[in-house]
Image 1 (cartoon, rainbow, N blue to C red):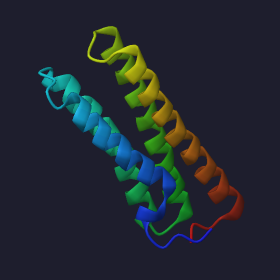
Image 2 (cartoon, rainbow, N blue to C red):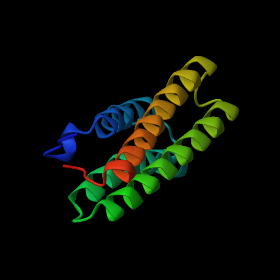
Image 3 (cartoon, rainbow, N blue to C red):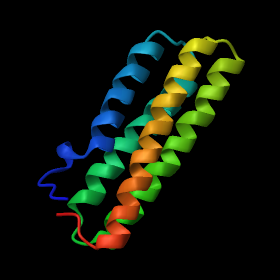
Length: 121
């Protein structure tokens, strides 16, 4: 695996799309605390992938990928809240939950690859 820049990482690309959808869906949400939290959690996924990639060691990169994976869990938890209080319907919940699970799976694969091969580039 040869990656020259973080924009080439599939999990980062998927996270970028997720953030766009979160912003579009909740742009008119008047619950500013909730809106801010789900936006920040989504951004945290892509930001930690990018920041970790730019670190000088795979150990640090892996650590940031674990943080990104934790942010995936936060987004999923917030999606449950959004569903439970009526901000989103069941179909959108399932769609977004699937997107987040895909990102988490990609992160798990990247972590496993880095642990096994010891190189990101």
